[in-house]
Image (cartoon, rainbow, N blue to C red; front, side, top):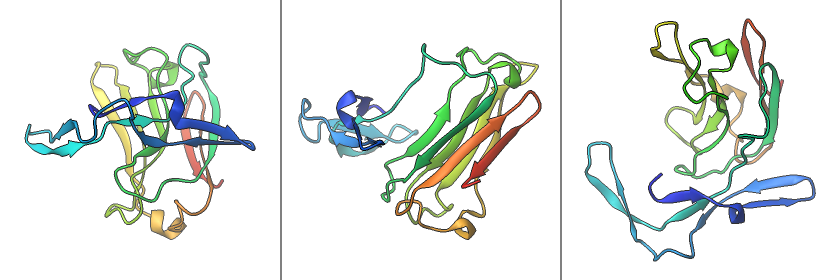
Amino acid sequence: RNCSKGDPSAVAVAKGTMRLSVLRDPAMPAGSCTAYKKDGSVIGNFDYRLNGHVSTEDHQFLKYGVVAARIKFQPRQGQHASLWMQPQDPTYIPNAFEGGAEIDIIEYFGDDHPEGGLTSFTYFLDKDGEKQTVGGWLPNADELGDDWAEQYHVFSVEWTPKEYVFRIDD
């Protein structure tokens, strides 16, 4: 994250399809970003990147409903692709169903990932203000197929005052 930033040049729309890319940042010298592990040790030096993404922040808020996208992921590990919804209130209202949950509808971590590559999560604060995480790696992702980077699939979440329902291709 220290070596990248969102940029409109990494977003393209043509023939009804949006392509979100990760591009080398031409304004930064090659290999000039040092990446670190959580323990502070150096991973290596990398090129700065520009990331394509779409945000509805300050434009659209959905309290309940369905969000779906038809997605074909990238094959390479390290190019994390996802469809997320962030809470309207960034402090996470202590009631997930009142607009305080982050909903990670789908995330893909690349072909041949040891955990299968697909995850879905919700993050929210409980009534005591403690951060809670529900979800994880989809254990049966291989049973659903392994063509996540070769074929388009529809990923969605439907939420009501009582539940979240996550779907892949219905």
